[in-house]
Structure formats: structure tokens, C-alpha cells
Image (cartoon, rainbow, N blue to C red; front, side, top):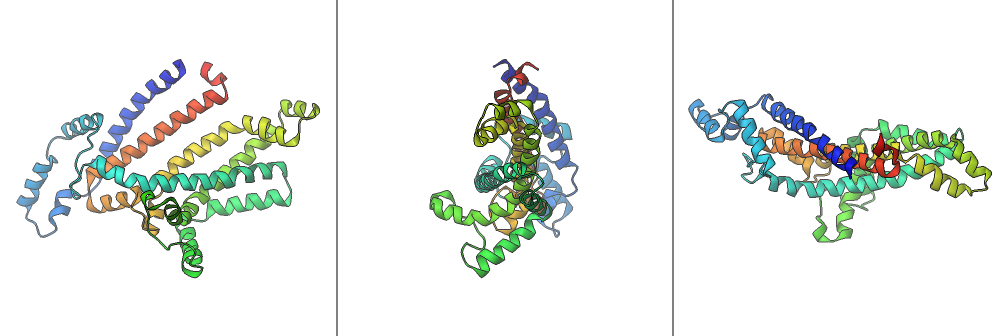
Length: 313
């Protein structure tokens, strides 16, 4: 419990810096939301009046503390264009993105960990080279290019899956998954490659440890030696990569969501940047940054569970 409290308290200054950086980055970005809202034909007096009504003419520090006070009470402001609370807009867009990221992560883990273990067990063989070659290809191919290829093959040519769009979970699990399969594969391929390479590397390192040689000398079965002893000790770097790649999946889904026309966080960011909708951009960036921090906290806590020495270091 002491370790958990220390880790949570350590997040407070990190989150404070994140909030300040998010606010400043958005406000030093060129563009005037009032001008965008009124259009190029609006007069300067009209634009200035709208700026004042939106609070954009107040000193920057006043805007920051006003925004921060709202964040601490769960109020991220109201979208300039959609005219709805930012929290509500974020929650609406978050569901498709989380569904897509979770499915992409599940696919990546299901493929990568067995592939990494198999490659490590057969180090230097053609199987190892094939897996590592495949992982290199997965890292090298851009997600949008893979998305277009999958769309052309499985949706246009074979007609097995929808070309684009999104079906919410309320329309049925099967229909929901049908729309997510192709974008999840496109999004998760790079993550699968990274996890597979880390799994192989961590397993190879563990195979050299003395306790595994002792287990072999005692007649422990190969399956138990690999999955019970080696994988458990190789888990820390694998968990780190999985946690970091999940954050990347959520934050980097913009391109995939745009290609497959999924109304998630990615599309929300693109539309908000195009409209200079600062309060929505602030909300999205802050949510992603906080998500990264919480994922790292979860990884630290998992470390302490898998390796109790971490709690006393």
C-alpha cells in the first residue's frame, strides 16, 4: 500500500506540468477560432466582440487558471463549434477509439507473444528468420498503406467485410466486430511486430539464466520450463512494451480512423484542429496525456506484483 501511495503522489507534479504544457501548446498555435467561426467576410469589430465573449482577450494566466479550475471539477468547457460540453463530446468519441484500440491490442498480443517465444526457442533457424523478417515488415509498412491494402482485398475484392464505417456495440457484438476487424489489424500490426521482437529478446536473455538450467537438470518439461519459468521472468519488458504500445494505439488512431471513417478520437482531433476548436483540442490532448500517465502507473504496479523487489528499491 505504501508503494502504491508513493507512486500516486509522484503523479501530481507530472500531471500539473502536463496541464500547463497542454494549455500553452494550444494557445501558441497560430489560428483564431473567432475568425474561423465568423468566416473571412466578418468585420474586425465583430470578430473582436466574439473573442471577448469567448474569453480569449483575457490575460493568458487568467485563462489558464480558469481552465484548470474547470478541469479539477470535471468541466473541460464547451466546444466553440459543436456547442456541447467537451466532456460529453470526448465520451462520445472515446467509445469507438477504445473499442478499436482494445481489439488491435488483443490481436497484437495473440500473434506477437507466441511468435516471439517460438522464434526464441528456434533461434537461428529459418523459423526464427521468418518471424523476425515478418516483424521487420510489420514495423516498416505504414498503417495507412496497410489499411488501404486490407480494404481493397477483403472489402472490395472478396466482399467479406465492410469497406468503412462503424457499428456501435448496441447494434450487436458480431456486427460491432465486423466493422473493427480490418482497422484493428491495420492499427495493431506495428504493435504486434514490436511486442514480438521484445518477447524474443527477453526470452533469449532468460534462457541463459542459471535457474532455467537447474530446472532442465531436474527434469522439468519443456512446456513448463518455457511458459511457467522463462515467460514469467521475461514478463517485465514485455509488459512495458504492451503498455506503451496501447497508449500509442489510442493516441495514434487518427489515421486509421480517418481511412475507415470511424467517428473516434482521431477524427475528433482532425476536425477540431481544422476548426481551431481550442477547448476540444485541449480536452483531447489532456485526456491522452493523462491516459499515458495512468498506463505507466499501472505498469509500475504490475512490476511490483511480478517482482516484489521493486517495492523495496
